[in-house]
Structures are given as C-alpha cells and as structure tokens.
Amino acid sequence: MDRNKKLRKTVIFAACLCYFAMMLYLLFIQRLGRSYLNYWDRVQNAVNLIPFHTITQFVGNLSSKRADIAQRAFVNLVGNIVMFIPLGLFLPYYRKKQRKYRSFILTIVLSITVVELLQVFTLLGSCDVDDLIFNTVGASIGFLIFKIIQFHVNHRGKRTK
Image 1 (cartoon, rainbow, N blue to C red):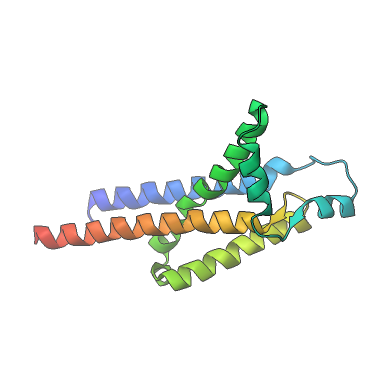
Image 2 (cartoon, rainbow, N blue to C red):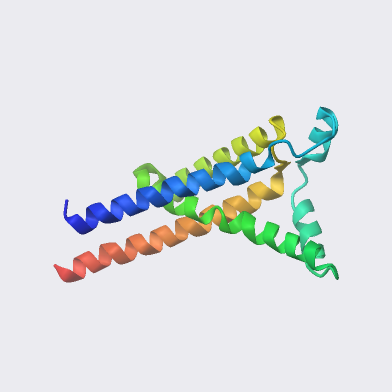
C-alpha cells in the first residue's frame, strides 16, 4: 500500500473514531443527571411516536420572536440531519455490504431505532420518531455523497490507465 493511501486510511479512521466519540457524548453523556422528574413522568415526556409532530413544532418555532427558541428549533432541525451525514459516509466505506442502499438503509433504521430506545430507557434523551426520520435523511445524504465520491474515484482511475 502506498504511503498516501495509508495516510488517507489513517486520517479516515481517526475521523471515524472522533465522530463516534462525539455522537456518544451528544446522544448520551451530555444528558447525565439533567432531570428532576420521577421515572414515569420523564418517560412520558420523552416519547413521541407521532410522525412530524416534533418537526412541526420546531418549524413553527423558527419564526418565534424569542431568538433562543428560534435558534434551538433551527439547531434541532438541521442538527438531526447534519450529525448523521458522516455515518452515511463511514458505514459504506468500512463495510462493503453497506454499499447497496437497501442494506444500508435497513442498518441505519435499525441502528437509529436502537439508539432512540436506549435514550428513553436510560432516560438520557427522548425516543422521537421525528429523530428517526431526520437522522435517516442525514445518513442517506452521507450515503449519496459516498456514492458520488466512489464514482469519481473509480472513473478517475479508469482515465489515468
């Protein structure tokens, strides 16, 4: 393996580790010890199974006169998409079976569902079907970017031969 390829693989691996550490922090660790409600009240407040309910609330909050509410809505809407784009890049990069969209999307939906359930059962977040929707969109965008990069790399190699 040439030196540039080895360096690229090392940089991608380091980025992947940093990404997963950041996700672990954002999805679980930052939420430790944040609530004073009893367990069942917390569970009741942490579950949304109605598609687009939370999304609709946040979209409505974008036009709030209070800047903090509008900012929180924007960060939540955009963040739930953007933070899963790298997963759509890393998963097919490291797992050849994940380079087919059907296999990829099944893995993503199952993985995000497990994370959402872990968040509600550990009370370190919420279980929201809208998170599943937006996270899946983000990962799919990452998958599309991966496919575009893969296409260009494959065709660049053919042109230089």
